[in-house]
Image 1 (cartoon, one colour):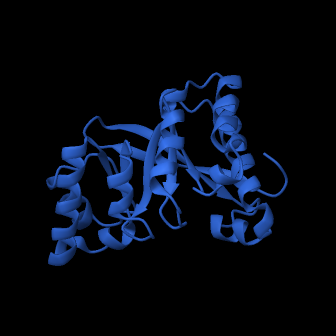
Image 2 (cartoon, rainbow, N blue to C red; image 1 turned 90 degrees about the horizontal axis):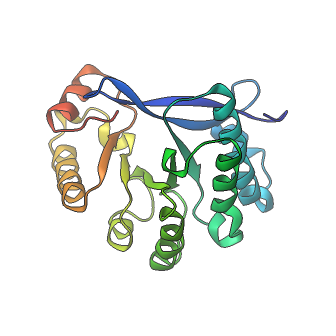
Image 3 (cartoon, rainbow, N blue to C red; image 1 turned 90 degrees about the vertical axis):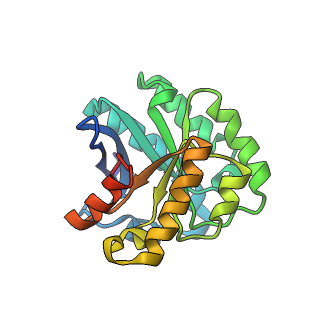
Length: 213
């Protein structure tokens, strides 16, 4: 929707169920330009307003496409400080489109600083009571890391591609990922391996117990 951007919907696959678990909405330029290119064109003062409005657009497009499963929506954490409607607007859009809150997964990017993890967790958990789920995106590449897991537990955790690339031949990465997965098991968090590109990477994670790719 709109003249300046649209969306690609990337599947997250459950290899155990042999089905699509969710689609992640990825903002794209009208010419297919990447999310980074789209965000480069947004003035810094408008960034969080664009973040909020683009989520609503993604929900409306997903509804028109009749996507049958869950929908992952990216979310800049500071948007919640900028506007209380940052999340509620998405829930309202979903209601208008006949999408129940339990089909929405809010992806918190780890690449933006959260000043107060505990306060942020309390605010987000208010929305989780409606059924909306929470994921930490790019885990292992940003500012927060394990502090996020300690202060509020997401429903899902997406391992960053830097941990995944070539893991079958990298002992330190294997040890780190096993430790993360053990913590997630104890906390009841599902792990998604993001950006798997080779059979060797796939088999390592599958043998480690990951089912979402």
